[in-house]
Image (cartoon, rainbow, N blue to C red; front, side, top):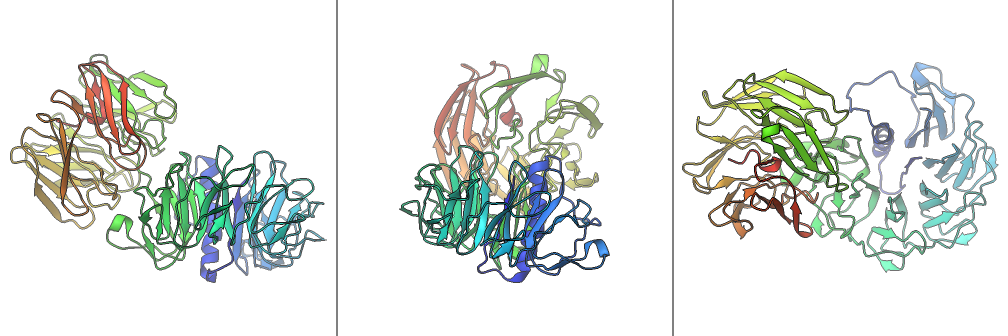
Length: 619
């Protein structure tokens, strides 16, 4: 089952087509698990003469569409009458047996587990029967069955719960034989409203059910579930009462959805939500409701639809024309955009949290402690002279175990998808490997720094080409990271003698340099402040202290965490988008992690001589 909804207010017609096409794509990427984004059009061309507000792909691959259209001319054929709802074959041809013929606009569609089709909108008849704003159709004939909830105004969102009961949201005041303001739950047989009555003060435009059964709702309301809640709330599935989740948006929400890791994505008209300024789109902590560092910063219009691809990338559609991610330079994106999912080089289980992990050099064994479920994975891969270079080299949203072999200049990658491996040559014996996503396609690129000629060589995953960048001197330590917030790793070095940092910004090909630290310090760059840009930072063993230059304003701060013999291992262990200060202590083989969300974690893992992977590149 999937649902796609269209709230009727405040959208120019240009947005509607974006929403429809976007919704279709969102379904494919979320449920197939193998689809990849493509820019080329195929021959699929239903050619509707009006707006399409809802798109659903059935399990058999056929495509349900709803909207304002009255004819379709599939794939260049003659016009065929289809009033506001139709079903297409996967090639775009019309399913001629299915013709429910709605009397007015269809704004939402959902498919039950038994294949029957729920439809919402502003129609008064559909499927050969008088049905006010909501109906259920036979999957074969398109005829309306006896389900007749009889809403007195529009139904904009339909969700089928796991138990089969039907959630409806919209702008109605009565549905299922009861007074229900804008949100209700219906019996799947009788269509009658049950006792669930959150009583929203305004239109409910979007709903989604979490894995724990709780119901997230977004819309144009300022109270719901017995509490003041501005435009977004979470409801108890039994009582309908709002819980403590309260992101407190300052304007309407059009869409709310949930990532696989439980984080909540919201889109709409707002300019602040979750305690942070966020223009039109934000990601929220599922417990606190606070906005994390995800900040695409849309302008020129609102966000209408949001979906998550199987690889973790986030799609957004709407009226916007410009994005300025994390306060960076404006980038033109007309009405639809995709945002990269940051994959930590140490997130081996794909839960968006770095995993505690080690490489046991003498036996070339890899071990990681899955943050998702607390289990341990181990594999033998490589030799004692190899260099560990983990990262998402295959683009599946999980870090792959990988090593670089100096003796041959070869890379060996153990695919996280199926545990097969592949190898390829790139580099020479004295190079320093530094994989990162230099081209911004969400996949780590094989790369080396060649001290002998002070040049970087990058094998782009996006097109297979090679980029060479002369940058640095022979004694520099390569420290690539996304310092300018453009979604691409920047070529950068740490010059330990004078304690200098040099960054070649990928966004505008300018050079940034600063003096910060001394020769005994350990470079540990990362986004510690949550603005989407890596901060220049170092760990000072003599003090056990961390020093960070804020990328926002170039001020710095320092704090103690560790001791002189600890190995710094910074990464995002709690999945909030911020780097956490952390150390591995060989003397007791404990990991000490100062989580930016959730306090200190102490975890025994590894042996004293293991290489802790999050600190493998720390000199």
